[in-house]
Image (tube, rainbow, N blue to C red; front, side):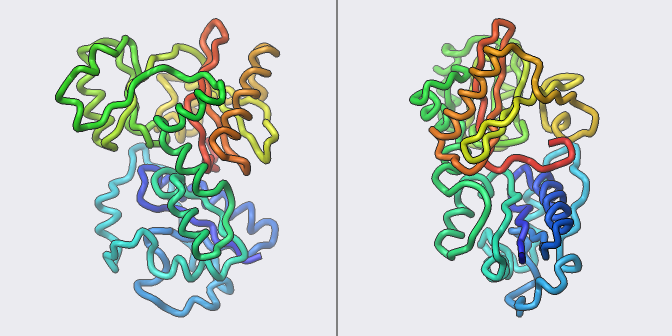
Length: 321
């Protein structure tokens, strides 16, 4: 098959996406497919050109992924480096090349890649792609909206409030906060912009960090416990994985630094907790309109109370993922 693996983009997880895409390319090429790793934002070539034979030289034309940096990419610099400086999210020749492919494997993470916009555009162009449709991606990308669907499905989640940047100065939200708490962007990924706030004196710095990435954030109860991830593929729930950082919490650095976490699969938890968590994972995936595949993340406290954190519609495929 002729396959485009689409990566990059303009999200804070741009670098992670390239590494995921590189691993997917390696796997597909090992099966004999012709695979092109394409940056959705930078595209191929400086302007519209003839790409009819691009699958005859895919490895030469593919992006060469680098290692994941310890910091999120400078997206302003990324935008400035595109030669055509178009307002289009899709780089030169991306749509044309994707139309030539038998299917596009979406290795995008974060904004636009996982919020349903790319999926909707591809639907309109008649381009086949992997993963869920635009509706499920849009719902699951926004953690505030996700909670509404989880609530109706009977899936527990950390309680909290949403805060828009324009409402910060008014200050009445502060009376609704219990400490410790977690402050995080509503639509972010890879734990970028997330802070654990132990006391009120730390709140403003955490708000500054979260609002640096987005204009809509969440302030949630802090759940002290163990972190887990559950894959769901075609309504089949996979074994639970426990993710235990050696230091701190499961932040951006711990997610992608080799050796920073200990992953245990299947997770060593009680049969009852296993059944409940897997049941919640399936309920969440169905409620959020994610029938193809997803990864649902959870926390569990010392009393085996389970809290759903989020759903990942295009889970990472990095070596540490």
